[in-house]
Each structure stands twice: as structure tokens, then as C-alpha cells.
Length: 237
View 1 (cartoon, rainbow, N blue to C red):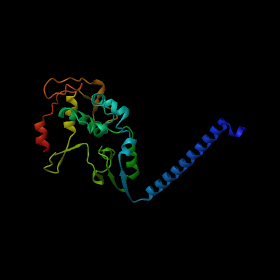
View 2 (spheres, one colour):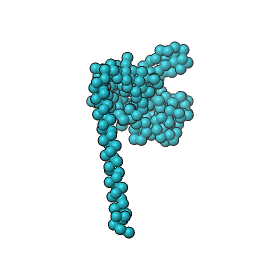
View 3 (cartoon, rainbow, N blue to C red):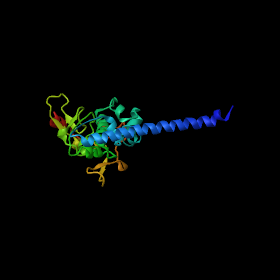
View 4 (cartoon, one colour):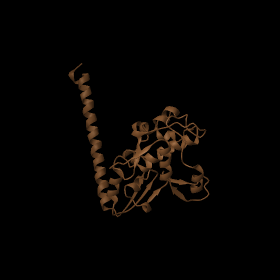
């Protein structure tokens, strides 16, 4: 076997080729980014289309550490491992269902995304005649400063309730009801310098297990909600 075909040399050749390919694709990507930048600067009108990937890039992950931080009790009992799958879980009671969804809604709708992706996007189109079409329901566009009248969120908004019949088309802001559901689970709220809103204080949970027929004693950490269901029906239906 000659030196040219020794395994070490073969490995070095492969690494060199791989690095060349990476550099090639990086150059192509940079060229496309530069072209997009030039076109965006010239454009008078801009249409934005976005899906879940945009919010994921902003830090709204529905699995991994973020999921475990807020839903470890549900994972233990129901054996799902991401928020999306939890949306299809067959919960044992209505209280458990709303305990899950109140957390889901709050952290994905009322808390800001960790990274300023939407804010940077808004700066790119500020002052232009823009319109955004999105399947995202996390309100990130509006939280970043986008005009509500220039948005079409095709799948709704986590922050809105509507009649379950539905007997009418009106929608209702749900932050107050969602916060009450969180408080009933033992969550407190703490101020954050980086948040305009108050956020759940998960480090100081004071959970209690309920004992009544309507309580969630089967799932550690949940107890009877203090939200009056008849009031919710009256307000939202």
C-alpha cells in the first residue's frame, strides 16, 4: 500500500473535501442573503409568510428542556415528551385538561420569546407597506410591534377564547382566566426587568393536592381550580 492510499491520508482528503463543500454552501447562502437584503431595501411592499420555524428560531421550543421545565408532572403521568403531543392527551379530568392548557397558553402567548427574532424582522420592514400571513398562534408578531391590521393569523391566537358551540363569532381575551388557573395550581408571579408582563414563578411553587371530587389529586401539584365555570360560560358563550 502506497502512502497515497494510507487510511490517514484518505481521512485527510475526505475532511478537506468536506470543508470545501461547507465553504461552497456558505458562500451560496451568503450570496442569497445579500440578494435578499438588496431586494428588501428596494421593495415598497413586503409580504411575509411564516410558520412554526420562525418561533422555534426565537426560542419557543415545544420539547426538551423548556418542556420539562413546565410540564414534568404531566410527562411523568401521561408519558408524552413535548407540548404538541400533550395537546392530544386524554386527560383524566377537565381540571387536568385546563391545568395543562393554562400553562401551555401562558408560556407560549404571554411570555416573550427568548431571542429577538421577530423584533429584528420588524426592523427590516418598519416603514414599508408590509403584510404578514402566519400559522403561528403565539402572538409574537404583535408583541414585537407589528400592526394587528397588517396580520392574518390563519389558525387563531392562544390569547383568545371563543364560544365552544359556537353560537357567535366574538372572541375574548383570556389572560385573566389563564392567570387564575395558574394561581389555582400554586403558581406565583414574579416581576422581571426584561418582561413587561409578570411571569410565572416556577421556583416558588406551593402546590396543594385537592381532596374533593373535582380536584386533581391523581396528578401531584394540581388542585381544584378557583375559576367559576358558570362564570366562564356566561362570559364566553
